[in-house]
Image (cartoon, rainbow, N blue to C red; front, side, top):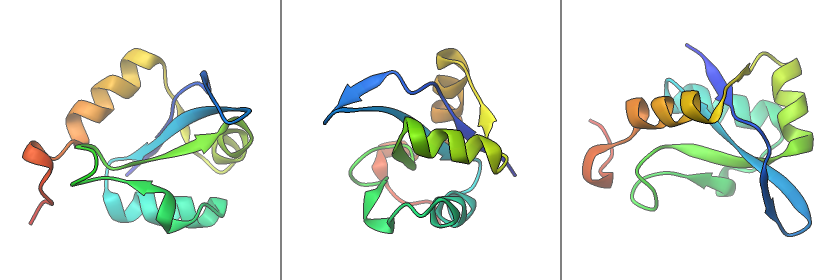
Length: 92
């Protein structure tokens, strides 16, 4: 299983942000906890169709040092499509 991050290009609240995604939701939560990202920051069904965390550029740098795979915008969109949950419903 793998964890992925795209480039921190989204400006909000004085920071640059990016997406943290993984092949498996449990792996995503484990990795976010390792980064110190609160579980309440999780975005997934039914709020969004693809399980992910929005993280700052600083957190992204740490994530890469911890083994997250850097992705282009096209690659993270492909991952989004692969892990998304149809109709925003949790997978069984």
